Image 1 (cartoon, rainbow, N blue to C red):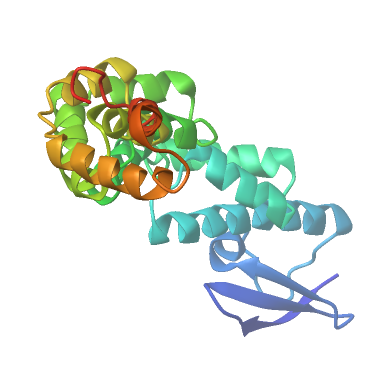
Image 2: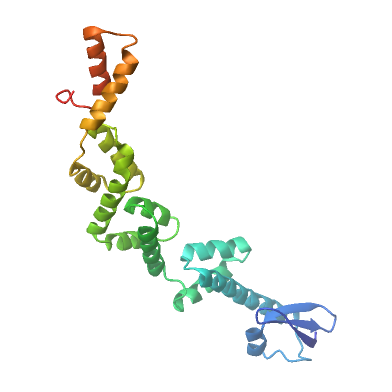
Amino acid sequence: MKIEKFKKAKNGKYVLILEDNSEITLFEDIIIKNELLIKKELDVSLIDELIKENNKYEAYDRALSLIDKKLRSEIEVRNVLLDTGYDDKTVNDSIKRLVSEGYIDDLRFASSFVNDKILLTNWGPFKIKKALYELVDESIIDEVIDNVDYSIWKERIEKITNKKIPSLKGKSKYMAKNKLNQFLFDLGYQSELIEEVIDSLDINEEEALKKEMSKAYDKLCKKYSGEELNRQIKNHLYKKGFKVSEI
């Protein structure tokens, strides 16, 4: 079947119009590589090969457009290409080419991911790791996280803690530290580092004790009096985390 004419399409592609008015859309590079000139004869097997080769170009081009917007891991690119409908071989060939050309680099991706989370979020190492598990190999994650200096995580905990403490005003030292511990643990920080920072905090709970005692009195004096009232107030304060010696 002969090529009758070419029609320019978008994104470096051309439409080949054949003598039976059927059309094939191919990248310009494929047309040049295969010397597809007007009146050239194309048999069915060659058309199939051209379509397969064009699919590889399309998959590669699709991946480049993804990477051009932001860094992507190999898993991300692979999933997008597979979801788009490309077969495994086409995807594998495209990924292999992108890796060899340096467009896909999971170590660089993971390093950038970790740096972004450190700069833009309060996430700790475990939360960052969890997010990365679905994107890159675990060995790469460990390498990148291990390269973050211990002091950076400590400074972040201290910064988060200093911002959080005002909202814990009125809590006992025990309750305040427990809440801070849970908050930081949920953000993905190491327990031993959390304890190191929290144990060094100097939390003045005298005002909190007086405030909580006043609230307890106002509530309990309606039901109790005398020694029983005192006992109930002390019990209430103890449950709130205040030490017996301070009460």
